[in-house]
Image 1 (tube, rainbow, N blue to C red):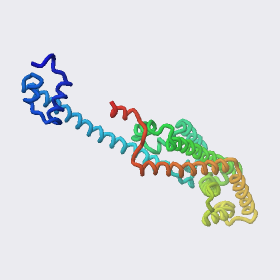
Image 2 (image 1 turned 45 degrees about the horizontal axis):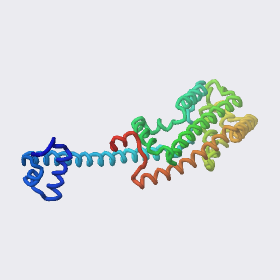
Image 3 (image 1 turned 90 degrees about the vertical axis):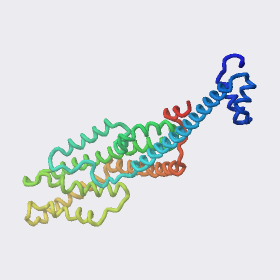
Image 4 (image 1 turned 90 degrees about the horizontal axis):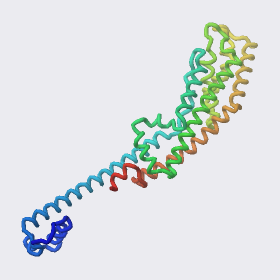
Length: 299
């Protein structure tokens, strides 16, 4: 009889002898001096274990592929979200009441509370875990550094837009007093501000001021020189033309305008870089590195 207790190593050796050396269970039993049924049972146990290992390996391979697909999805979402925004419209709607400046300050406070990663709002909460895992894979890599830089640049640009809008409202209020006619107390805010803001953004981003906007600004002097449907006097038209020119000059040569321009250039540069880096990962179909999920595959 077999000396001592039959171990798992014994059974694995039987399996090797049977499948690699082509020995029958009876031959193995005779050599090991044990019952043939014991050898057959041992062979079956080892075979089942190996089949289970093979099946688990396939599951792990499939899981790794799906994990990589999730990481690629997060990169694709970053690339989509990290685009250069259209800033031609003001960040806060031009309210027809005296709450406009309060609303602008409210949005500034909201941005401040969001910290330096406002892009999370654009990407969506469903990507929070994917981004967390992707960050563990890409820690120290160029794409992740650019991702962080983009969020900060976007944050600065949003603040610059709000500061320019707030400054414009102050200019209009100081120059036109915001209440020239009792029938339309906020005519300048709702009519002039959008024109000025659109023109200032065009100048800050290096785009030409379109003909329609130019014409609207030119005609504004005569429009706001009226007291209603009455034809404006030359004196009133000249007065408002001078005020319109002054507001425009003060606006486009302001620190707020300069800050908007520099913030836009920075974001534009980072946007182009992050698009290239993201595209390289998407074309490679693989994200190197490890995350806490990867540890489950390597046990």
